[in-house]
Length: 218
Figure (tube, rainbow, N blue to C red):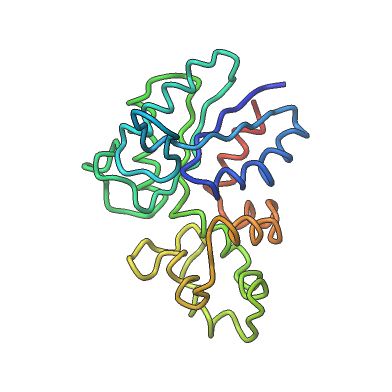
């Protein structure tokens, strides 16, 4: 068995690992263990977990996980959308496709961590992109009838759900919340993802699929 530690941005990503990613990898003798980013360490009381406001929070937790010598790999499950300005590579972010931008950031993160047991992964653009692998499932979850185009608009200009843009009012989560105000990411996100299934998400999200292949091949 190979152990993989996955640093997750929030509870939704943690649940995604627990319910979908980990059971699949276990069939390949890979044990995936999620852990939440610690965003605040008070002098007393419980720590706060989830969400990123400074890169130092991410780096501290990655370095901490790498101290576990029994882990074959440490990786991340973090949204590209909303990354803090001090994240490695943000100040030199190139023009180009979302894939080019994220590749630049992941490379910068790799260089900053500088450990051969570390594999960076940023979700393009955010967790809700996975839900658009089958947008009709989103509608069915909220008992919404009609066409996908009428609810979410024309998505045909995006070659992949990962390419749905990161505008303030047009990123994947905003598109869902505009029509389904009852949507709560930690509750509905994992439910919809489970209905869609990993194979459908991987078939439509090449960056995610490439990451999964790396984990499968440990």
